[in-house]
Image (cartoon, rainbow, N blue to C red; front, top):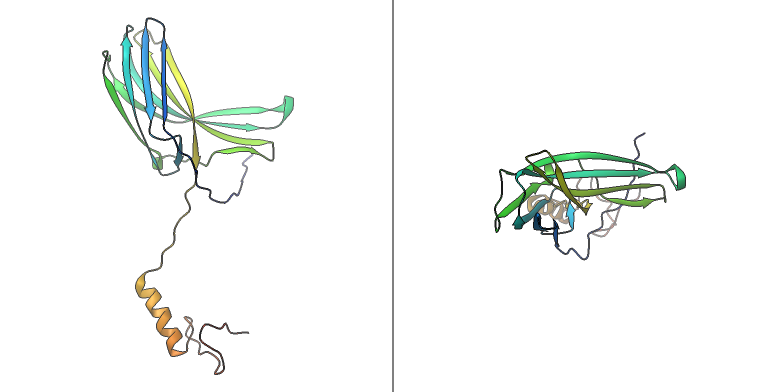
Length: 192
């Protein structure tokens, strides 16, 4: 069943970068970094992968956006994982010291804000999954949770629209072109 949750827009106060070293002993050692840990739904994920040690033959590397929905409580918890995007960031074998840039635009995907324990029964979480695939089709991956949030739309009226409203007030008419009552002061509202 589809679930709709209405929440007001909240802006994250602290938004630090994510930096982590991962690897397999004596085989592979990489360092990855993302510019932020919290992104608005139309944001761009910027980062880089740095190879410190490469002793396996990597065929290609991709980054996935995974959405994990959780419903229910206690023993009746149900998890559903959905891969929203697969984005290839490297094709071919990297060498030690190589740095691979990441630039992933979120606006092209149908995303919702992160929701944690709504009514203690519903959650939506997002993960960036870094996947390396070697020549024998073995997959090495590291998941990192990120928070997505909805940026409120700022509605700005044009200066000409504001000037028209001001002139109508000065002339004694409302924006809907009805004259004000003769005793009403400027800025008072009409009573109907």
